[in-house]
Length: 332
Image (cartoon, rainbow, N blue to C red; front, side, top):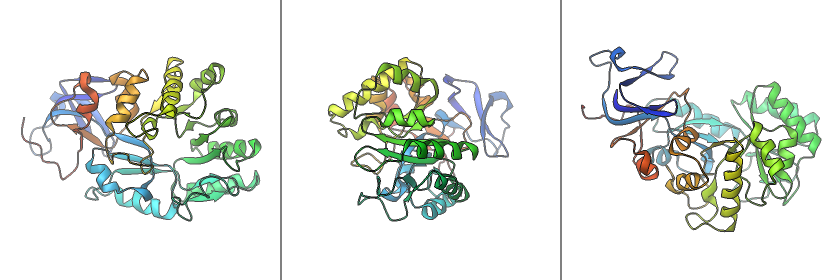
């Protein structure tokens, strides 16, 4: 129980959170909460676990990320065996890690991004040589525990041919896995949309997306924000392009998830209040930002000890902590 609970898009009082046998957390009327040791009472506000939907666990300390207020992460490109081992550890209550959902390796054209980058460890990418290779690559990722597929379309080097990109999306869809595309450079957003991709790993920043394509993307795609990678607190021209694209995408009804590309440059390892401020500047309401940072069907809980302040959302969220066995709130 808490003084207030933010769940399902709004801030409420008189609500408790019940952890179901399957681990999912569900709000219930406060009067249904049992008395005794089975109920923990929190001052402030409880909400679904805060999620960073773009992280590279090989490049950050995930324990520090959790201590910084992030309850769950999406690893969007890593060595499958290493990420799977981390994800398994993260499910233990005393692991001190955020829960991890992961995509496995980057799927890329031979010689394509990020195989040519020094930060990408060996084994973190898989080259897709043909349409026939798509089914095998998706099956391998799924068998390694991936619940997402990450594909790269980087105009600065070799890219998957349109037929290959479409084959990867079709294989992933048949396996029940959404496809996240790293789209960087002229024409890559159009290519991702034409192939039927579900998500973009970044808000587009290398070109202003024309309104027809933007409207089409908004009808069925989700964009992961990653706005603060452009300038890291001192917005550069790419930041302006990205914020403008996101603002118009949202105006057309597009869906956005909070993600930071943690591991890419001097980003704070936890809640990034700069990212939150940029999302607000792009037109999201405070409740919209919270929706972008959470999942209603959550198995984790975040806590704001001083209570959620929607009028000062960035600074309020900067105090968030992940609820776990190490948290011992004082009595209300």
